[in-house]
Length: 362
Image (cartoon, rainbow, N blue to C red):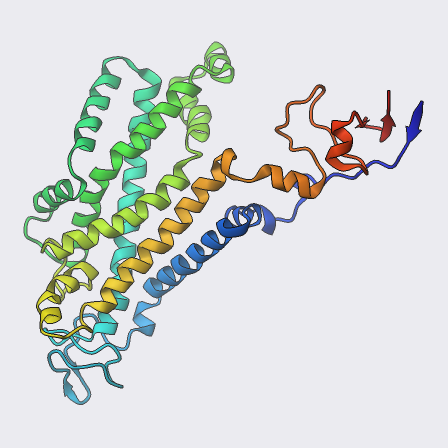
């Protein structure tokens, strides 16, 4: 017997949704749920505040990063927090709040330069190595594995000394720190892109491109590159937090930027070691909290995106149960099915609907 019942209208397809809901960050927030959404939103808020602070440092900082005098004269050394200096002054006579704000600008500059450089170099080497293989692949793998075997901070120190040559100017110090961090990150991008390229180059569409006579450069940059870089946003966010820590470590060990050239959190922590033992807490606390918050925000975003990219951690079953629709990844005869009024239980008992909305029962 055939019974006609109304067909449940599925959700609108992705291409019919609003442009706002399809934006990368908005899409991930809508896709997340529970504690995962809280972590993602919290990370986005903290990271956004960090970026805004860096961009608006000249506006919101009460003084310059190397300013020692105001309208009333010199600031003074190790002055306690007051109305004129909310976080006090350092042993060198700098305003702590101002240097903490300006330090966000330095950190953001190093992160952008380091990660962009490492992405370009690591992705290019990974594509070439994975696609062509042979002796070039073996040489690049050995070199990147050798670099990856070195301790991260030690390698950054060696590269910083070799690159800076004792120079500590703003852009000289920023580029020295960025390039030293870049050398550390290149093997990570190389490994990921090489593995994806080795897998993709055996796909049917790549073989078809070879058959029709497409050049290697066209295949690499048009077909392989666009499919091998899907995980780069995840690596980018995780490496950004590591770059902030590496920069702070270089500054703390004395390989950072001089206070007259730029503000740097690690350098300020290094100068505050003696202050802490003397009971002067305000010179070390603000830059230390700034490092923790910046790294925490970027890490929360990266870990949340990593969880959302893993199908085992998305909670698709809960979403499917709540919407009454079988997930598109379900393996059923004839493709995905739409649940009727009985929901998923009806499907399990044999209830099926065709494209015309007619229910057929045995």
